Structure formats: C-alpha cells, structure tokens
Length: 134
Image (cartoon, rainbow, N blue to C red; front, side, top):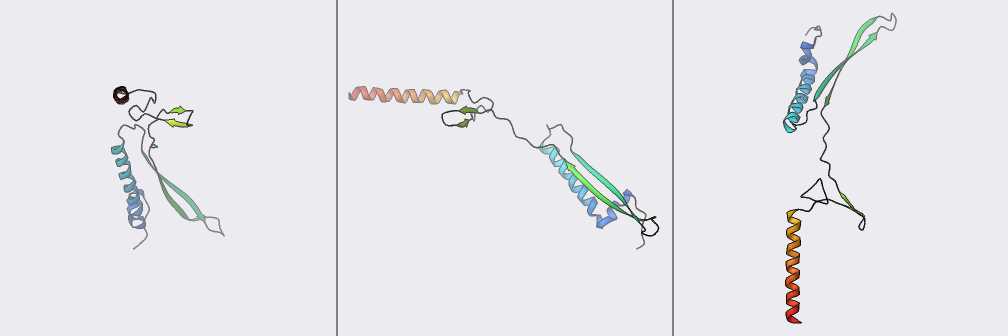
C-alpha cells in the first residue's frame, strides 16, 4: 500500500484505528459521567494534543521527516462526598456524628426522644417493682 497524505480525517488508519477507538471510549466515559452526575455543572473534557517534532538530516540540517505524537487527556470534575459536621467528645477524644442529622451532631431527633422515653418508662417500672419488693 502506498504512503498517504496525513489529515485528521484519516486518524482511523493510524495504528489500525486504535487512537480513534481510545477517543471513542473516552467519549463514552464522559457520557457515563454526565448520566451518573447530572447535577454537577462543571464541564467534562477530552483534550487531543498533537505534537510535531522535526527530524532533520544530520548533514544538511534540512527537514526530512516529522515525528507526530498524539496525546489525549480526559478531565471530569473531581468526586467529593458530602461534608459532615462532627462533634468533638473530649472525654473519649472522639468525633461523634448523628446518622439521622448529618449536618448537626447536636440535633435531637424523634428517635432520640423515643429512646429517652422508653428508658424513663423502663426505669420507672423498675423503681415501681423495687417499691413493691421493699
């Protein structure tokens, strides 16, 4: 097969189409990220860089060839979790969080109140039993 004049429309002929395949796979990853995180407004990017390096004749110093390097980079917004406020417990040197109220570890919930009422009720029943036995 004779040599062909390079143009970007012929990228699929380089390395049996591997570059185009790699770009298509990157494109699919961008679409998947858009689908997974549609509320993240930051752009997803694929950057293709083509670097041309001259190859010169050692005797004449004239251009005889060019090394062409194709590089591409993918850029998606960083993934970050939520911020959770945690209370410092000095006695245990620990951080405490409230699973029902991740933004406020000091928040008391209905579940906390129900547990407190159950404990009071059980404690009251225990004291009543002690009074009868006493």
